[in-house]
Length: 110
Length: 223
Image 1 (cartoon, rainbow over the protein chains, first blue to last red):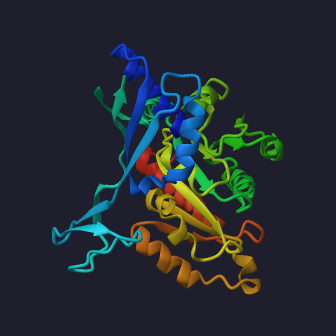
Image 2: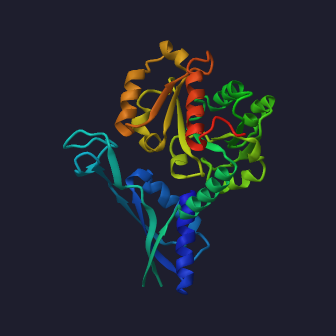
Image 3: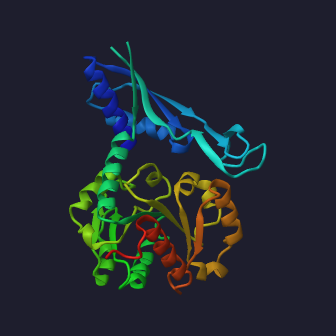
């Protein structure tokens, strides 16, 4: 809910800065590690957007996968099922490259 | 028309968390964010910790409870600096709530500040509070597959306390399985087996606290 509220606040602030009257779409990028549940976030987003310029806007949620880099052999791979083990050399020393991001990328306004 | 925004959704929280961390460092506080599911034994751990640290390092507590002040009442008899945050419907503490709590607690009188988060294995992981370490508590009545079900929390924490080991014989919880699952998501996590009822493992937890306090501030206690 706090995340939904922040999304609405960020989108509304950006729209107001440009003098837009209505937001039709909000594009959010969320890394898989953030554990966002799309249906739930969409529901709360709709609720939080009521009585703002974002009321009725479509939430376009882009979930990005987790990319890891092996600190031992340098292999870059997609981390599946939270298994932080290098597929090439089985090392457990993995640096996370992406998958924790959570941001409002762009909005469509009228 | 499209507007490029690129604003981090948790940026405001992270900024306040960094401010909180500055305040803690200034007051020489080692700050721990204690997280678990409801009923794992966080408040009992705080009681045991208060007893064990008495006369050594000074403990302070910020506790988050959804509706009641039960947790704070239980800690009153130890005469600790305690702030109770009633979060209402919020399922986690955020940096702003901690910032508010700071004006209600005398940080000069605290060496180790434990922030007892709301019992929840999902939401608290995303919100930094300004802590030095995140600590997780898992009780053996919850199941040894929890690290795989809630990997984000386990990934971000430095220490796992496996509590209620005195009940192991009544459950199908396997310590070996639980630890193997932890290793899959976080190979560097420290793990201590404890029982807040029998006191098993509590000395290991206390020495973890001492070690990390010394690691941050060098000396054993402040002059």
